[in-house]
Image (cartoon, rainbow, N blue to C red; front, side, top):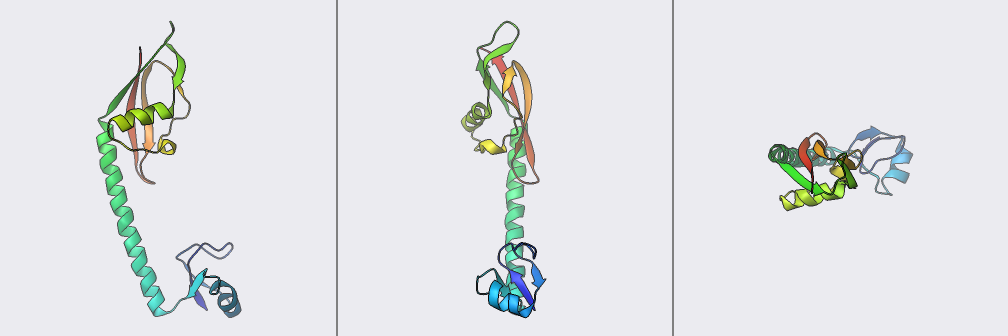
Length: 147
C-alpha cells in the first residue's frame, strides 16, 4: 500500500513523500497516529496542490530576500568605540551591536542570521555576511572607528 507522510518518520521518509509500506503498518500504525494518509488520487492531488502553494511562497520569500540583499549591498554602518594606541578596541563590537545598527537603518534581522565568526576587536572595515534566506546571503559593510 502507498501512503503520503504527514510528518517525518525515521527509516521511512520525510513529510510530503509518497512511500510504499505494508498494509498492517500503514493501517494500524501510521494512519491512526496521523503520521500518514492513504495515497488515493484525491489525496495525491491535494498533496501536489500544497506543494505548489509552498513553492510559490518560497519563491516570494526568496525574491523579498534578494531585494533586501540588494539594498543591504549599498549600506555601510559606522560603529564608534573607544580604542587604544594600536587600534585595539576597549571591548568589542558584537553581533548585537551590528543588529542594533541595522535596526536603526530599518532592517529587521535575527541575530542568528548575522554570520559574524568572532567579535570585532580592531578598528577597520569589515564585510559581514547576513543569511537572509536559505539560498540568499547579503553583505553589510561595517566601519569600526575610534571614538
